[in-house]
Image (cartoon, protein in one colour):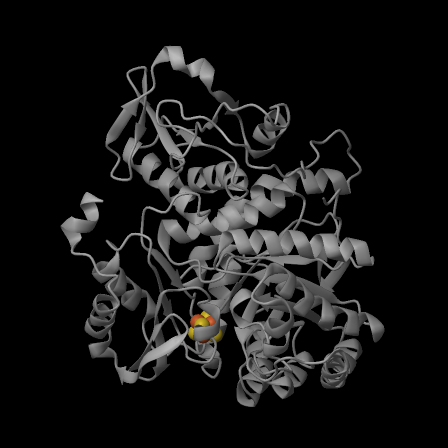
Length: 543
Ligand code: SF4
């Protein structure tokens, strides 16, 4: 168990990150990096929205060189925001970018390794691979040292190297080791300007791997700041809730120094969500920095899921319930928000009532004896009439417990909001934390300079065709280079394969390669039908 984790401080340009500095907000452009004017214009929109660092794709040498023009153009407009180059596969692009801008993000899964390049390596061969990686990293570290450039070593659940997969599998241990191998090389070379991240589109995997990273770093005496984010979170409310649940769970535990909320669409829409998340924590970090004590300390305890008896449809083998109240009567609602069962007053004392925000609920849960068989109701009241505030706060308060399998029912009370909106959010929180699956899960990347089609419109079209297929995971990804890896555990994938073309995946296998986009959705539907996963609309609603 982690007792406490305080990161060291890394400076990105003039911006200090880590320690008790505020949690920094970052995002990423989705323009073509070779379109200098469009990238500058989008960066300015992000800055005006409150973004503190902007990441830009630099997939090749041209894009990396163009970062100099983008930086110059921003400077000419009086904007001095730290820029981050996003690198995959191309060490030369990283080396060029490191001489131009303030931070370079590399993916240890594909910087020096190929995904399928190794299997059954002996210990000696594994060590030799690490030496090869050290040689590959050496020139980049030399440039970073010379220019004061920082590096983020960003592991993605879906793009681990073949070498790591062979030894650890697709696990949080593998994700952590993938980053630590690179981090240890940096330290060996005397380079400490490093930030780590563990990302996944699965909130539970993202939380578990980042917790494990913090524990391992602590045991090895490493204290690099940590970047938090849920990848391919999707769009709209589902994306907001997934991001808030994953990022907020870790911030509640005192883990995390910078965040990116990744939503499909224009990147500016991510910033108000990121502000709503960081607002919960930045005031206390400021007080800590000023030496003001007597602040609530984060509760790091994780809990074992207890066995419970069933009481009025709650606990036992029942799925996690959603409670609501009308005219003083409490009842459970199903995913279509119809009342299914009322909670009689005489049964209320057979339940543990846990009430408050995430930290308060965790404290109360500590007092429940592990042998108690009473189900727990998690309850909190929100007086806001601001929908985003409610989405973020309820996702963090309930999500941070549900992600560990804690809670048999949730009861978010928001008297100033529409009851159906509140119920919708409650089920989205259960879905995001995989506590109860009642919808199709859409995994979609935020898009970037590699995307060659209108991903927002396409996602809406794919959703319209498949959103009744409860429990299926369907990915819509912008590019064939990273999309297949990053869509991780999707059942079906719709991946951009070049201008006007799409490649469809069934699991990790290609089903249709390079088909015209116009044919893609009908073929996707056919493929789901042939696999036996299709249901007609009424049939699935009836379930
Ligand atoms: S999957 Fe999406 S966000 Fe990731 S590199 Fe490709 S287009 Fe960009």
